Image (cartoon, rainbow, N blue to C red; front, top):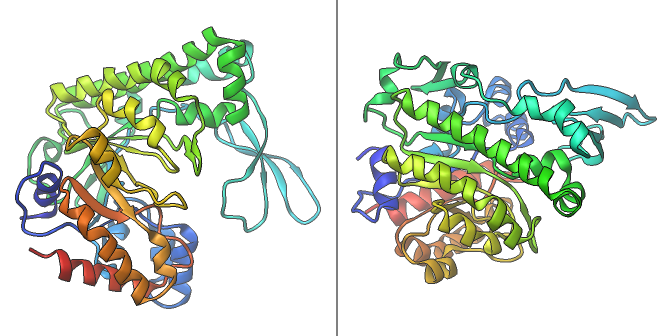
Length: 385
């Protein structure tokens, strides 16, 4: 079996020859550290992105089969994006920067974490209509400008012209990115702004959600009607933190749930039965909305301080709830004993079926190269049927 076949077999509860060894990419600082240590070249560190040729080289060197975050990704966000520009520079080098989403953030020198938000362009209907509404309009170039992975390289998408996307000749799973139905809205409004808007101006809140949902639907529809074929579909949200969601679950279910269902119903028409969603944090309270509206694969199942894993979800939702992730990446900073203990913890979860372990986010800068390699070697030894 190849990696595409065995991945689909695991997630469909079919027999397979061995468990695929999957990752979710790296922090840029991680690759820079590994380059400084001599494990990879600086050119590889600088050229890496999800699913490209360098990603394939690094996967092989580390012992992974592939990166789950490997999708055809047409634009379902702001287009054109805001022009990023420095608004003010402070002593010490910190800056107020207008980012691509129209948010002013505090950018600190050498900082790799999420910057502090200072203010937002989207605050009311006037700013929505002036700066955002037209940036969420559908047009065909959103798809035609996207790049398609072909054997590790990326080429322009030409509807009807890429036979590679029409046949089952790939040896790795390849997804269709379906966008973000609330996460990007949260980014643009901010957590506080989004909470206020849903109460202060519910019609505008509804309009924003419906506009974003309609754009995502039409992008997905165009990609599927082109004749391209995908192994799974994938959404991104990141709307939870360590204690739970950044939106009221009931509101999320009422407002955003129907947008998911429209898209997942369309995916089913084209035979796509694996629909994954990337959300960090403690996601338990939002799983009912996703699962009941056609999203069946949780990713990356961040272990965190709340010890998330697929077992209690499987007990609640049954075998229809699938998972990719749930491997605690923090052990890569410790020792072999910690890696062994983590693999032992994963064994009964793999035995449930419909679950593929994967580091529960980007591999961080404190990860030791040799421990990552040890992890993949042990996973092959233990889960090689």
